[in-house]
Structures are given as C-alpha cells and as structure tokens.
Amino acid sequence: GNCVAAAALGVLAVHCPQGLNEERWRAGLAAFEKGVRGKVIDAPGGPSSKPTVTLPAVSLAMPFAALLLNGFKTLETRNNELFAPYEGRRVVVRVGMKDWDNASWKLWHPAGAADLRPGFRRGDAAGVVDA
Image (cartoon, rainbow, N blue to C red; front, top):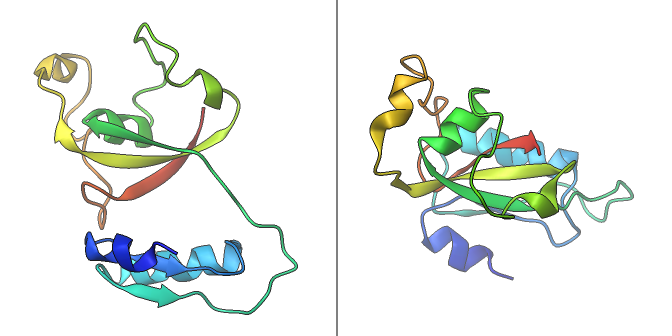
C-alpha cells in the first residue's frame, strides 16, 4: 500500500486492508483530533461485512477550501468542467498548500469565513461536501 509513503509526508494514514467503514473512519478521526500526524495507525476490526466507502477528492487553494467547507462558497463560477463529474455526489475536500493570489474575495465574505476549523491545516482532507 501507500500508507508509509503518505505518512512520510506528515499526514495521518489509517491502514485499512479490508476497506474503509464507519468504525475505521471514526478511529482515524479520533487519532487526528489527538494531533497524530506522520504515522500509520492500524484500523480496528478485521474483515467487515459493512459496505466500504470510496469518495472522490478535490484539492482547493485557500481561501476557497475553507469558504466551501464553512458554507460560504456554494457556486462554482469558473468556466470549466472540473467539478462536472462530481455533480450530485459526495466529495472529500483537501485544503491545498497555496493561496489564491487575489484578495478580492474578502469584499464579499465576513471576517472568519475563510478560517479552517480547529485541528485542520493545509494539506489535510478537511471535510466532505455534496457537489
């Protein structure tokens, strides 16, 4: 797998050889909330009869990732089809490492609208949204 390589990048990796289920997802969230980073943890439980979850992911530059996750960005206005394949699906949002270089978004959003939730930082998969 790629857990060791992912952990070497400073992220928390949850080893799920039997697939991801709710119990394993919650174990990963609990470790994340405790500040575990740069490690591989083994997911609890053995083979699961519960369905696994596979979600597409997008990486968005700041402030757009936070604006979307905080409910301020609800419309994609770029003239491309980047998000078209995800319409009507649940999507993981990763917080990109770069900032958008135009601060004009501040004119239309309140202070704090682009703050990440406590415990999240750039590079993290910080939430799930319905596209």
